[in-house]
Length: 265
Length: 326
Ligand SMILES: Nc1ncnc2c1ncn2[C@@H]1O[C@H](COP(=O)(O)OP(=O)(O)OP(=O)(O)O)[C@@H](O)[C@H]1O
Ligand SMILES: [Mg+2]
Image (cartoon, rainbow over all chains, first blue to last red):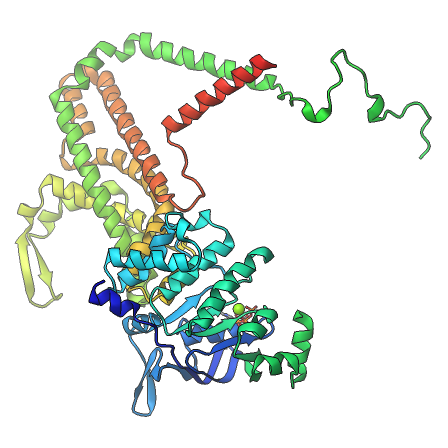
């Protein structure tokens, strides 16, 4: 194994994610209203909240697919998408943002695999494109990761030839191919048939035990109770309450949390 | 509801036939007869036959002269020119179209406006006007210089040396082609799902890689059929280069026609057949290119004509065997 491969494969250092006073508007509609959140290295945080409460927006701000109007995000202390200039924040160049995104994995609700590439190329694309690995090394890594998500026999298939659960597992393998310190999941199982949910959750659970920092938006309360170190409940663009799953899910302090849980359970 | 008893027919006592009673589920579905379709087919066949008969036997077409001209060196030289002009213009036009489409989709309002104006102007001017305008360009500008407007020129070259007929033709056609290609490419890029852009951005793929490897290959799925359509128009459009004194396929035939006035009809037929061949070749290439870019878009690839023929034959064989067995 070359030095390059070893470096790319060196065990991931779990990242700290900090969200500081983030506000976000779409036009005049305030979607996030002052979010402060700290996710410690290796911690698994599940974000819950009613539809339209701003959960997706929060995740997309963490990897700077959306820009916050006020506030900022840092990963391992490094500001995301902006840099400090005196007392102000200045936007980073697109190229620099792309480099930062390599340290933040993202898994979409509807997978968004590249349909014209094979499963293997989907996973190998990012390490090759970012110059971290050569083609054959990247493919070797992709094979290994696909084996880890139970798809060793599907490397040559195209995404549309796979079931939803298989596609989402490929998407997870693709997200971890860059060895990100944190992985964000936006409702990873909502687009799946009920019988396929389990296989995807099993893969995420496996990642949770491997020590990567995870932030997961999901409506799977049972999964949250089992895997989460912390549950964050968001409503109306604010964090209503947060804490260990037993507390937030078992004995919620807020009316709105109780309300929400009574609907989803 | 009061129906007289005895009129109700239940399944159990359905009309009896001579066949041994077979459960409904085991019976073959009889295909629907379509007599109207047979009549239309017959009429069309008769009309086609008459047309072909006329084409072959009418002395007006002079098929013997046609075969004399079909592979003449003058005609083949013209064909070569047509091919060259087409290929150069198609490639340059597509490249220009990609640049214009990217400018149109860029965040810069200046680039967007420039691209929009270019497309607007070039699509408004008839191609023949562009060609003749370029042809006379050397009369308007003795030298072409590249530099700051009203300022120093970085380098300049003599227009008359540059402007061979071929260059004029290719430049004119490419300028025109790029305007149309821009819209085709833009439509193709817009047809790519937003989620693809987001996934590529979320993975931190470099901008150029995102376009070349993720977005553009998927855009090609809709670009190829539309651009081929465009290309077929271009092949025929090349016949206009005759007016800038380039002897393409049509031009050679036209020149020969004025030398041998009696052969005008067979010469036009020679040209027609060659254009038919060219567009057919393009259509075949289109099929395979489309098939290539369909990878992953459908669960399986569409069959090639050969594969289709093979499955038809196996199907037919299977049917004959089934019929024989019944
Ligand atoms: N691009 C956009 N333009 C305008 N409004 C938007 C945009 N994206 C999201 N919104 C609005 O922002 C609010 C929060 O959206 P968000 O997608 O973050 O909610 P969510 O909590 O993820 O909901 P869900 O559970 O349904 O996915 C919604 O009211 C939505 O309509
Ligand atoms: Mg959402």
